[in-house]
Image (cartoon, rainbow, N blue to C red):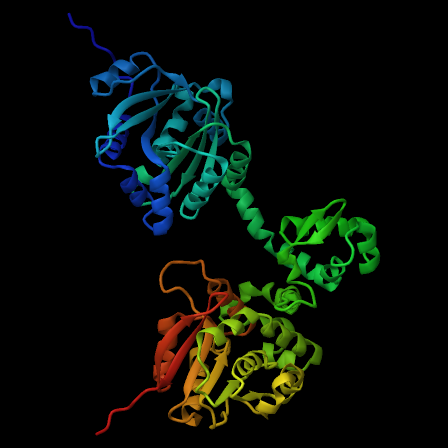
Amino acid sequence: MTATIAPALAPEDLDRLNMVTALIRTNDTESVISKAMPQLHAADRAALTRYTRFTHAAVLVFPSTFKGLRQELTHHGLQVGPMFPSVVVRQRLSTRYGVPLPDLTVGILRARLTDRLGSPAELEIFAMITPPELAHVAADERRHGRENHFALAVPHADPVLLAGLRTAVATRMQPDGGGYNEHEDNTVLYFRDAHHPGPAYRRLELISAGRYPGLLATHQRESAVGTRLLRLMTGAWATQAINAAVELNLPDHLVTRSDLPGLAAATGADEDSLGRLLRYLTTLGLVRTAGDGHALTDLGALLRTDVDGSLRALALMYGGPFYRSFAALTDAVRTGEESYAKVFGQHHFRHMAADPELAELFHQSMAASNAVFADLVRVVDFTEMQTVVDVAGGNGELLGRVLAANPNTHGVLLERPHALAAAESTLAPVADRCTLTPGDFTEGVPSTGDAYLLSRILHDWDDEQCHGILANLAADMPEHAELMVIERLLPAGHDTESLAVPWDIHMLCNVGGRERTESHYRELLAAAGFELTATIPLALDTYVLRARKAVTGTA
């Protein structure tokens, strides 16, 4: 009589074993990275391929006992070595399901295989003894496969290399925990893409010999989804902390003093409360500790009043009127109408025009993005343009830079009278080559220009209003003149990295306008009689769209 062994593995576990075995045999390092992270930048993918090696893939199975498990795996063609205790997976399961560690028994078995190029690889089998009271754990893990993964080993790791590789992977996969296995002296960092169409590629283990406690702590902190969400939800607190620092003139005072008592006296603030604010500003990267005191970082220095490119005015705008209007964003999303008017009783532009101090702050905040202006004169040749008309150019910052870089060019600033008064000082260095013209660009523009600048204007308006603005320009501009539209562009695909994405919500909330894609602007320009001839990137995710009047055919 032949003795038989009752199967230790359920059919669904055998299916999952076969899936992971196939993953190993049909991949190598380059292909598994490409399949798991198809949108990874080419340079990052090349670096991962160069510095890592596809070593194994893993699956978690749920036998009721370890007895007979190795024999069954052998029967299915998997020659496994001795079993070792699992540390990381056992801890993760305990945390995820609230099961005490002593109630969990998890082991690791390994079977030697080869990848599609014939290189050695392993099938790593995590096995959790599963009595009836833990059947819910097995059911949930089989459904979601949270512990299944493929692994990339870093053969010659050091803290810098491992940190760089971790950052590259984290651009496409969410950190998903990790740990140090003292039995094998290695550090494992897990990543997860829960929405990958292939279940076998949803989880990656980056494994390296040695212990890296600082890097592991950072990775585990970023793995806590609740922590990430809390940081996002407290973004408004950061806005107000920056605003408070600017209102207290703290960045300016940090230039001349560093001690907390002296800073409290200079700002007129409570010493303990100011210390707490400084600590928060330190976590935001705006302030650093310096001996027993504090000092500005390079980032924080941009909030000073006396530096070129200061963003102080923007901090006051974002922490002031725009902060209040954003509190009514829900209403804007529901109605499609700007919330600024609901909060302040008037449209953004009318409300600010009625308050000279607020109007000046707004123009200063618009001029704060000096990097855009500097880039424009670098990428656009104005030498053959005798007259440049800046349409609704605010305090003249952009026009002033164009004229300073082109001493033979004349400028015309078209603005409303209150804005022209603010522009006089800005344009004083080029006053002999600049004409300040009061007017409303919605009614018409001067017809004497060779180039017309329309900087961050169209995003303030809906499509119908944009058509009217562009049609007025087309009617008044000479046939040879060029139009330069400066705006942020929404990504055409699913990329959300551009600053245009949050600014699109800003436009919805505060002015009733919108950011647009390049193709959207192309359509708007064409409808008004313009042809888009070039799109050139500038700083801060901004672009200059160069356009000329379209040539019409003759009968």
